[in-house]
Every structure is written in C-alpha cells, then in structure tokens.
Length: 445
Image (cartoon, rainbow, N blue to C red):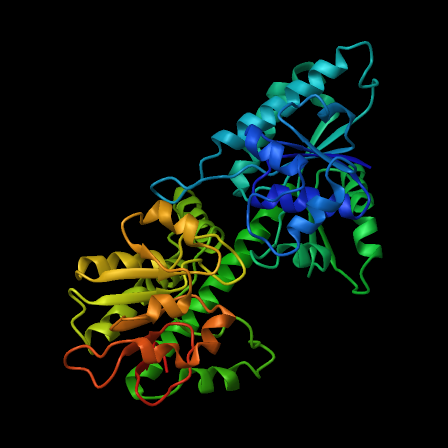
C-alpha cells in the first residue's frame, strides 16, 4: 500500500519507518530540508532505540522523504503527524496541523483536476496521527475540506491516535496494546484495517481494535495519558506521606500493585513525570475542559503534585547542606531513560533551583547533554557520571539510567560539605544503593 506521512518529527518518523518495515511504500513529507536529507540518508534526527536501523534498512527503497506534497494523491492513506505545541494556557496550537491539512487537501484537489489523475468516485483517506482534542478534529476536518475544494466530497478524515513511549517507540509500534480507529464510514475503517494487517500478522498477540468515531478516538488518547499521569501523581502523593512516616513507599506500593484492580505499573514514586506527552496532554485536556465549562479538579491536583516533586527534592538537599558555592552534580537530564528528549524534564526545575541557591551545577546524561545545553548553556557538562561526581559535594539523581546503579566507587571522589557526615546524594528515582560514607536520602523512601 502507498502511504504518505506528513511530518517527520518523533511520531512521524517512527510511523514512517515502521510502516515501511511491514512492507508499505512510504513517502515522508517535511518542511525542513535537513530532516528530509537525514531520512533519505537513513539517519534519525532523534535518539530512539531501533529507529536508525529501520531507516538504514528502508531509506531510498520503501521509504523516501521530500518537502513536496505531490505524492499525496497517489497514496491510499495520508497520515498527518504534525506537532501541536502548547500555548500559555495549556491549550494546543493547531496552526501547523491545520495548515498541513489544507495543503494535503490542495494536493488532492490539484490531482483531481489533472485529467482524472484522481478517478471520479475515488476516495482519499486522511488520518490524524497527531494528538488533538475533540473540537480540534472538527477544525482539521474543515481545513482539509477547504483545501480540497470541489474534491472535498471524495476526502474523508479519520483519527488513529498513537500510544508510543519515547525510548521504546519502535517496539511499542510493533507490539501494540491496542489500535484505535476513529472513522466516519465502514470504508475508512476497512482501509485502516488493511493498512495494519501486515503488522498484526507479524505478532503473535491478539491485538484488540477499537472502532469508534474520530472525536471519541482522540478522547481515548487523552483519557489514557491523563489516567497514567494521575496514577503517577497519586503514587507520589502517597510516597510523600510515607516519607513523613519513615516508611518505604516502594514496599507499600509493591503490595498495592498486587491488587489486579490497580496493577503494578506506574506506581514507582519519585521526582515526577515529564516529556512531551503527559504534561502537554494533561494541560490540553484541562484547557479544553475549562473551555467547555467544566473544572477538572482531579487533573489539576495531579499536575500540582507532579510540579511539586522537584522542589521537595531540593528541600531534602537543603536539610543536609547549604549548596551555595558548592559543586552539585545532576545525574540525568532527559525526562526518562532511553531518549535524548529534555522537554519538561524534571531536571529543568532542579537545575533552576540549584542555580537560584548559588550552586556550581555540573550535569551529566548519556545522550541528552546536547539538547540540555540549549536550555542551560551556562552550566558545566561532564563526559561521564564519574567526572560529574568528582569533587561534588552533593548529587541529585533525576533520571533512572541503568549506568547510575553501577557507579560504585565513583562516589568516593565526592567531597564532604560543611555540616554533613558525608557527600550528600538525593535520589529521585531509587537508583542508588545506600552505602557507608554517603549521606543518602530517597525522595519517598
């Protein structure tokens, strides 16, 4: 099947590479010539395990990239995977996405005027992969139809939200928990099922397919992420209570997770969630809810708890040492392991808080340092965790990279600040083992 994917960011590149891998002929469209060149060279512009291999395997064969929309009319399906950045109030900016929808419609209209290049009666399926609110779906549909003009009656909009986790996006695509098809007709649903048939044939799992309308489909995505974010915040809230009682929250939540009504995932308390999905999606649905006249009290509370966790970590540091003028190591700059994404990373408020306290901050992350430099060009960046710890009076563990669990003797190179019994380590992810000679504090244990 011929497929066009408009947008070659995180979602679009993963989608294009994975669809090519199951046998489709994919054209990726992006306005950035550098991104187009990278895809055609078989290189990913983001750090995502497995993605470089897929691009290298299929670039200039079943996958090619371009800045033009001229291949859209020949595709059986066109995906829109354009970013929807947040505004000040948390709502999403649909401008880039509606512009892409309109240009997609214009490409289809131009082909329909070209001596039957799009045969009379043919229908073109345009699928929104971007995360948008239900009212946003209607805006995109209007933009698509406006661009298509007289060909609008042959264009149908569907939604197919993604549930990919950064750091495991390729594996998540290849082994989905579910597929959600938001369509307006049986024809569109059948076309999406045909598109995904090779993927489903390649997995032994019985993947459930949810068939619904376009607006409900995107609401499923928001509800999914809002629930997970709230579960994390509840685990953190309970963890904060456990800390006050001198109880290990992890022991508590290990038992709680045995209840099959709750489940064991997303119960690891710590410094909070970040990234491009949970914060943005929860803020967007809160803003859309208020626009519709409803105050989402529970989601507001989930955000408040999450936003407070970095400050709680800094408060623990303050209880042991005055870090003014002291070298402090921040271990982990990405919002989670397996990615170089620093968007909404918990390291951001941590670094800001340390600088406000007059610390000499040194950061280390296995892959995210370059992206972090754009946010904090004025701090020191170490080439290794060992180098970051060397001479530091304190360390804060913000991202749970596996290598941090194996640091061992690296802590011996730290210094002992005035008033402390040993170098201070504040662990926000339960990565570091307590050891003799360290003043160690877990955030919720």
